[in-house]
Amino acid sequence: DAGVTQSPTHLIKTRGQQVTLRCSPKSGHDTVSWYQQALGQGPQFIFQYYEEEERQRGNFPDRFSGHQFPNYSSELNVNALLLGDSALYLCASSYLGTWTFGSGTRLTVV
Amino acid sequence: QKEVEQDPGPLSVPEGAIVSLNCTYSNSAFQYFMWYRQYSRKGPELLMYTYSSGNKEDGRFTAQVDKSSKYISLFIRDSQPSDSATYLCAMTQGGGTSYGKLTFGQGTILTVHP
Image (tube, rainbow over all chains, first blue to last red; front, side, top):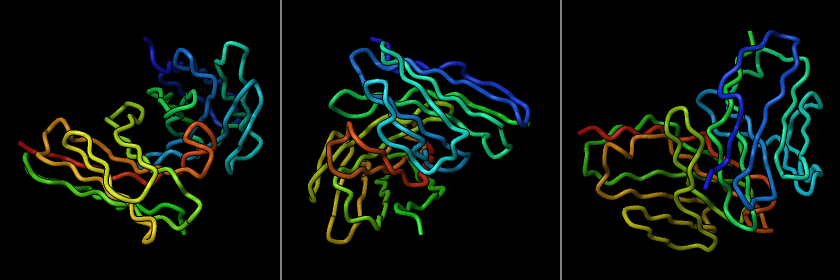
């Protein structure tokens, strides 16, 4: 049974550009959350999606947006990239239980 | 002040040692407590999940929660080199772990040397 799948694994973007990260949840999971993990820090909650709606949002600017599709997969979009957006972006999925994390997408903004 | 405080270490111990990892928190609304292990270039992996105050044991791992002191611990017995990783405490408010955000500590880097 595949776990949480994230793509791409790594990418490099230039300041001001836009990026889209993708997540396929674990089979049977209907809730997806996104986290940002800066180097040497714990993950920080960005937002959570359930039934294609944003259910909760952390302290992140509107440049961060997301979407959940009918098959429960999800996208994270970041506009107007800043150097400080460089981090590991983690997707986690759940269904009435504990959260399973993907291996993340490492974003470098130059 | 951060809601969850965790000593980042690094912590280096010899194989076979007992390891103690700790977190304190300030938000009394936290009800569910977790410990995750994160290997380099990987996502966090759930090790332990507890709700009530007290101890919970799973193999070489014991999780301890003291809600009155807002303090949680993870003990690793007979530590192995394969336990070398970053350990993250995480907690969430009511509604079960499926709902709401997880608030993480900074993570403690652990190295177990042979």
